[in-house]
Length: 378
Ligand code: FES
Ligand SMILES: [Fe+2]
Image (cartoon, rainbow, N blue to C red; front, side, top):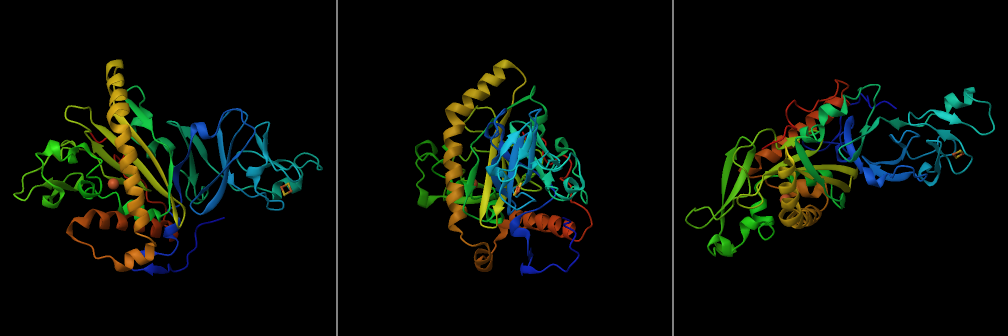
């Protein structure tokens, strides 16, 4: 099915085209973690992304396959079927499909008859990398997928130089556009004030919450907020590295935060994908990565993750989730907002996402992830 609908775009609100709440198509998305699709299992896995019900399984070689979760015969969910010889077998009448969506068996027909041609399953290019199952959700014939390797964070391609830790995938009851807005870098000193070591009141000379203000700082990595006291003295913000490269946001939905979790600890990058399951639910996929060129650095990173970062990340994720959910409906939220100067990054990201959506909708091609946007930031 082509996504090239050359109809004028309806806008839900100024700058918010209809269809965008269901996400940007024609990008690679990390749909599952590798363990969620066990090798050798005969059970396909159901999931939902960009408003579509999908099914995932592994073929006879163990490679991942992703397709629309609906049998083209009589429309039952294929995820309630089974995997036989690496093909997906429908539970109702036994039609089978391979990872490219071709019908490989109709149990009462001779092999490769005309009916096989008619009964194609819509499949998406899929690949496994870095502990994730990725799928290119879109129209691969109109917008051929770039190599996955060209659109993932640098560290996933260089396991000899980096170590990363995947966190459990979450589902938030919020629009992905609200979730992405929540990646601004100046809310942390307020929303995460209790969960960041930097906000430990005792360690910051006892400046109470009511006497804290925010200094807005513009950096090469966007707008940041620094917690200050009433005299404007920084109060142990200390959360970010000063030497940052790359962009905070990359298409289709990746936010990057470089963090030093404690004085003297190794810096890490938090990578966050936030994409719609559907217009009201967001899938949140996160890993954190450290530079680690040798065994000693790998051990130090592992300790930092387990002893310092893990608990804090869990708390921060919980706070971000309820903040996004507390903003409620996307249209209501946008209708009532009044943006302020430090929201300039939010505005930039919104414009980029809208441009990518409009471009693919108009058939002008796909807006690529900008080169270097996913380089390791620190
Ligand atoms: S409905 Fe799937 S084989 Fe008949
Ligand atoms: Fe946050």
